[in-house]
Length: 113
Image (cartoon, rainbow, N blue to C red; front, side, top):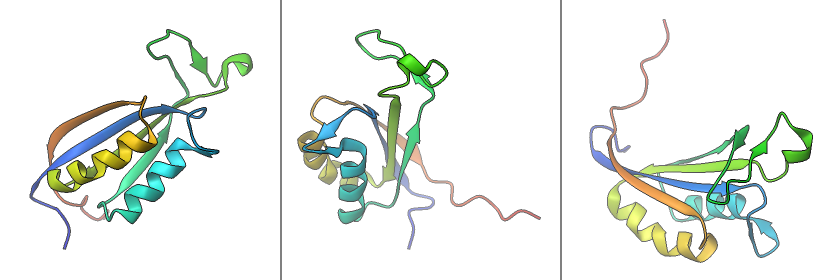
């Protein structure tokens, strides 16, 4: 049974390709742990350009600045499941900017005709 029609929480984690947890990419570690935790789903987005608190621009279009491009991990699930995942998130990505907001699951998109 899915979470359609119910209130849920969207967790958004802002990372870069350079972020590491041990010797592995933090985004990869978080995706694995989200799946192992039984979360409803997660999507990792790769940005083509961005900057963070330091103001350092990272851009795909500028080869010298293309290292460490921005990544955004989005997870949507029931609030209790997101809350249970937060300790794992804090352990794996302690310095990441994290946001949470309530969302309503409308259900899957209708099939194309």
